Length: 326
Image (cartoon, rainbow, N blue to C red; front, side):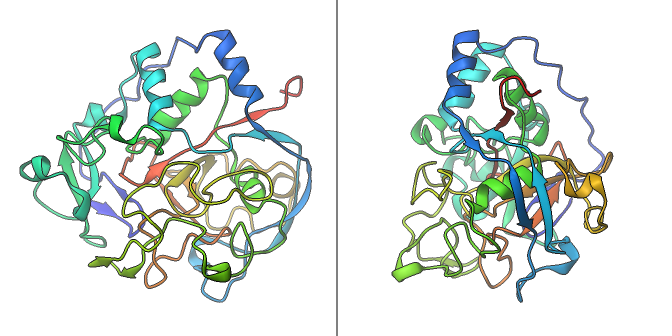
């Protein structure tokens, strides 16, 4: 197996074909309701990227650059387990984790009934990730756990391919990385977090990340050890919830640490990322992020994972074009 500290990849020689295209769509009335519930993000120019002193230059967080975006729609929250269950019931879709037969679960969250289902071997760079047979969106902590106990939490164990299938079914799409960052910033310019520069303004927790000593002790001071409900904490100025921490969020872009650096029309006006790649961008950090090893809950931070990868800390929210502009 192989993987990075933030988001392990399946690795190995196992390959499965891409999932079949989702032929069914949500009923037209439900698609229309879903679009009406989205937030409208105004077009304009914003400063994308960061130059934080504790940034990861190898991730391509910089340079800070002026990017102009057309107006777009985006969900206020990540997609919940309840919403994803509706999609699965309607379409019969099987996620990559279900088709692989396993997914990655953080060691301290593995359900007691699933401990005998842990596969041999660990992720070299992140031994706290365990490959658990039967772990998937339905059983986020492995067999014995259930999504029904977490209905308003973000769906996890969904790959980029799964997220794209849901978006297609819902009449939406995944946000570009630039759209995600514009929306996550909530109109603030060059702030470290969606609410400003202080992690704990007036001593209040504003996101779900790790407190304590990673990976041994999580004090849960923010109220959660795993995922939090999607509307936990205060929304940013645009109305988006939990764009820092909780779960990593898939974007549509292929990953590159350098593609965006050059000042070209395709990197500065409605950028959609490089034309090809091996991994997809994920943004926002998760409940496992900690300043001692992965402070990627900063709004400029970024990393990636392969399109078929799934873990217990990756989810997504959807975006859409304004009606009449696509």
